Image 1 (tube, rainbow, N blue to C red):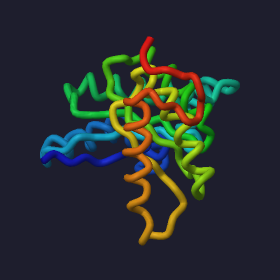
Image 2 (spheres, one colour):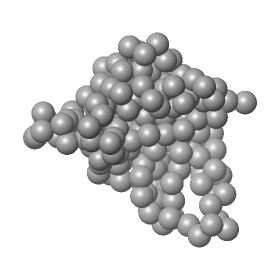
Image 3 (cartoon, rainbow, N blue to C red):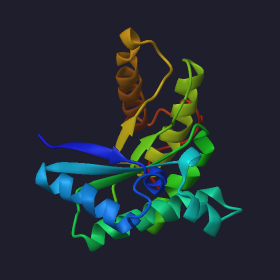
Length: 184
């Protein structure tokens, strides 16, 4: 079984400032190759690399998408194909928009869906459903992660909620958006 690790492109500029981002990503890719690991490139709305925020000052979602696309290009240039991308925020509408934009920009790259800091149930479940139902119905997303604010002894509920959302979407039941149907 292959495992993976995640890095946040927005954090790379903080460490070893004299090294280029390309060199830092190459180091991560070398570790992944040497240890038979996949990589998740995880871009969060709250921690986008300053270079992309500077380039897209009035469009944070463009900064997120372009940051992720840039890191995919780095992976491609290094000949590394075992990676997925996640574009997350605590706002389900931003999650939907960012993932739609990215899937248009790089339809070849698998997407890991998630809503960060979704919150306590039921609000956290509703926020997650809003994003996941709409994206999955458009065939956007390859893996998911439900992140609820729960004590450790209840963290397993995240998996139960995730399965329920997937089962509902597969059956054409869209709780967050009545009338939405799966497919084109």
